[in-house]
Amino acid sequence: MTRWAPAERRHLFWLSFVALFALALAACTREEAAPSREPSGEGEAEGADTVDTAESAAPAAQPALGRIVGRVVLKEGAELPIRPRKRGDAENQVEGCPEIEEADYRPVFEGEDGLVNILVTLTGDRERFFKELPPRAPQEVELVIRANCRLQPRLLGAVVGDALLLKNRSERPMLPYVGVQSFVETLSSGETRRQILESRGVFPVGCGVTGFCGSADLVVLAHPVFDVTDASGRFEIENVPADQDITIHAWHPLFQEVKESVRVPRGETVEVELTITPLERHTSPSEIRESTETGEGSPNESAQPTEPKKP
Image (tube, rainbow, N blue to C red; front, top):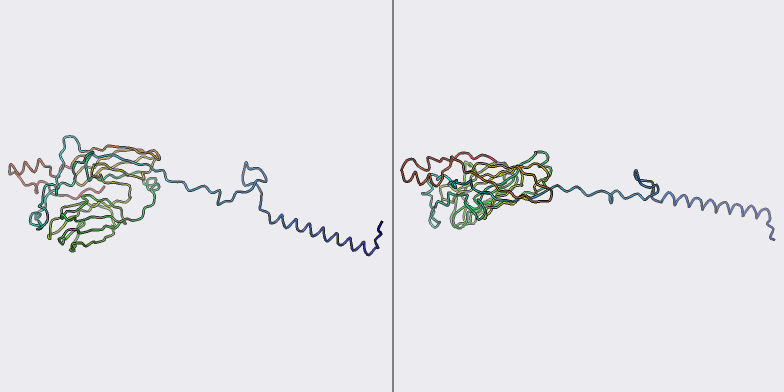
């Protein structure tokens, strides 16, 4: 058996002490560096791993939206109205353009399934309705004087902040106006004019003394949840706030506004049919025929245009 001298025993003792101290220090360092394993909430087992906050965050709730489709039909027994003629229209007939016809004064007509060029828009609870609408960047909308010297479309919907592109694709210079303007500039053939729509309202569009270009109506709204009935007479409105009371409005400057309440379930489509009636103050085809045949009164005098109601 080896016998250690007193000095050697003291040396071994201190070596052992230093080694144990180093091991204890290393263990403490590892414990401090390890991630916390404390429970993160009620019902979670003690010692379970904490879930990273970024990974555990729930995705943002998507708006509850639906869809409305349908058509607008003319009230039974009613006649489609004709827009009143303006003095000087005949004199503004442009050489090389088609002759002015009755269709130029009839902005709404029958399609396969319903009336064409009727505005259909929605309203609802001011706070909930707008809160559910998805964001929409400003867009460009177009009114075009086509090669046949006529404005298209006859009814155009837009949103405040959109840009109106007014184009002349006829072979003649025109003097188009949008709403009531104190000064009207010539729009040359092939030229495009851009205008930001800064306010809501209904703005009649036409052309001045250089030539007849028909007529159109520009309707600027506060929100994009609307549509204009297409060539078949149907409409389709996407992004409709769901699970709340919605009012559908069908409207045109020559017609009485019609309303209907509806509630759209989330993710579903609701189909509606709206019946609309012409305004009495505008001229109907039968009134034109009667005044022409009897000589009693003038179609122009019997149907002076008035300021259209804003939807």
